[in-house]
Length: 158
Image (cartoon, rainbow, N blue to C red; front, side):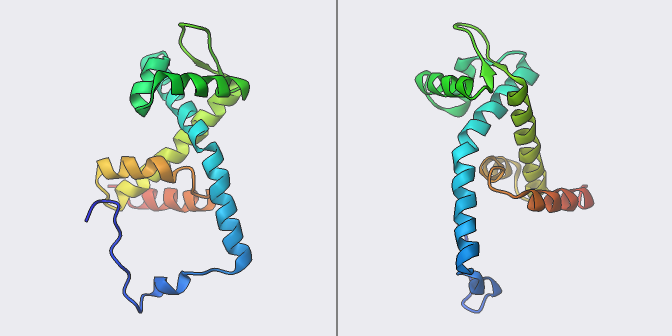
């Protein structure tokens, strides 16, 4: 079984009764996921740009492409979109810079990521798996859940 496969639930499992929530709640769950998917990629790019600026002093398109395992053309398209959204500024053949709004988004995304990552580690998830899982989870976790994750992590730090 790989790190992401789930063992089957026993037929009498308490969790099996949670399969179908009320219609309104179910609709809200899907709407929340759709909204998270819309901003997920933007947040990932902005977070990575912020990390590169903080740790390397510059954020170049080539570095983004290699770290995200995408082409330079894909990065160029996203940079144009981020520029249109007012999150980054760029000039040809120069490093990228975050606007004030971009900095706020990067800080928020980084904080969410770190909470999820530390929570998974506190549960005993191996570092490599925790890093992979946290990358997607950070976008889909409510503020309420993040607060509980943070409290749990603080309580269980070693």
